[in-house]
Length: 137
Ligand code: ATP
Ligand code: MG
Image (cartoon, rainbow, N blue to C red):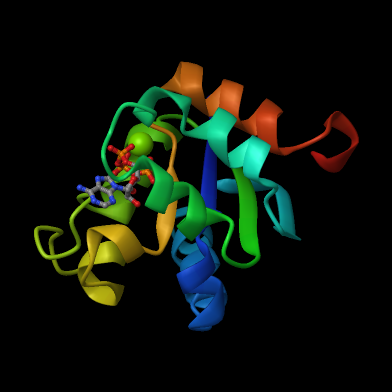
C-alpha cells in the first residue's frame, strides 16, 4: 500500500491547527499509521530538505522547521501521495485553491503550515527518516 509523510509545521502547531488538519485526512478516509509531536533537530531538517540546499531560502527554511515542535504523521492508502498533495494545496498559499489546507489556513510560502511527500518513493523515504520502525502501526 502507498505511504506518505505529512507534517504540521511549527506555525501550524503554534496556531492550534493540528486537530483540523488531522481531521481532514481522517474524513478523506486514509489510514493513520504514525503520529507524534516532535522537536526536529537541525541535522534531520537538513536531511529532509537536502534537495533544496542550493535555494536562497534554504537557511530560513531550516530555521523555520526547527523553530518549534512539529507534528509528524504517516498516512497510508491507495493514491495517498497525490491525494494528500491535493488536500494540502499549492506551495504558495495565495495560489492554493480555497478548500485546500494552505488555501484555507495560510498566506505565506515561508509559513505554509504543512508538508506532504511529493512521490511514493519519497513517501517511503521520509516516513523511514522521521519514524523509527516501532513507532508505526
Ligand atoms: P513541502 O515539501 O513542504 O510539502 P512543497 O513540496 O509544496 O512543500 P517545496 O518546493 O518542496 O514545496 O519546498 C519546500 C518548502 O520550502 C515549502 O513548503 C516552503 O515551506 C519552503 N519554500 C519553498 N519555496 C519557498 C520560497 N520561495 N520562499 C520561502 N520558502 C519557500
Ligand atoms: Mg516538497
